[in-house]
Length: 212
Ligand SMILES: [Zn+2]
Image 1: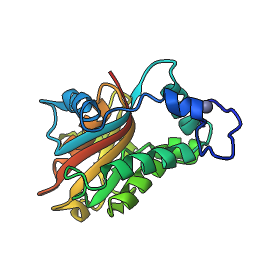
Image 2: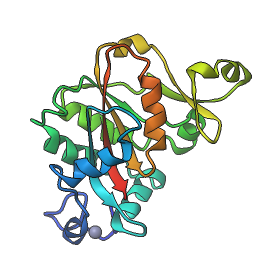
Image 3: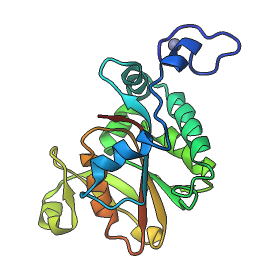
Image 4: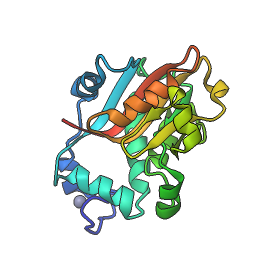
């Protein structure tokens, strides 16, 4: 799934060479601290974790490219199983009630056929005994009405906004928001601001990778 070489019988998803090359974070230390640092002073997170370190032209970039543009959803499944197993028994994440993906706009969904964080989020939800909800946090285009209501919306540069459907389902919940890669953290921040309106909800974040 990373280098497209043919796997041996004992290899699953990734060849041995790639597995050794994977820039896996130490999930007790930098896997937390680097992503926590990105959001410090911006949004309040109960816990945050990233599995892999993203480097330009590196193996993780190839992996995420294949996941996003080559229809290789199994990459998300593999990474979700991997991170989910690591987080089982972790106090910061075992209390998670619901897992929400960072949404993609429905026009993109139509074109690509899937949200690239879906398979990752579903595996995490399964491992953490949480519910996976992909229809609550949504991304829509800004319209005149929405511009009028912008007090309640958060803007993205491309004039897309995040909104909540049936937000009452999240009241009092411990929410895990999942994304593929965290760079500036702007997307997560916008989602968090919207989720902030939910009463008594707590927020955690899990990403496949983080770029330093
Ligand atoms: Zn390989």
